[in-house]
Image (tube, rainbow, N blue to C red):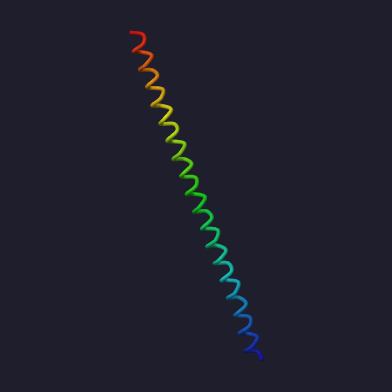
Amino acid sequence: MKTLLAILAAAALCGCGVETATTAATAASIKKQELEQGQKTLQRAQEKIDAAAVQMQQRAASAADDSK
């Protein structure tokens, strides 16, 4: 009887460990996705900033040409 209780207790504890590991893996996966989305957002923002800078340079060059 004691052996059966020990086996059941061990099985219950192992189940908790598996659930904890699964939860940690899920949380890590979510964090990875958040990081990737953040990097994509940063890249899009940088592209917009670069495009705006090019446009400003073109306008400045055009204004300089018009003043000549």
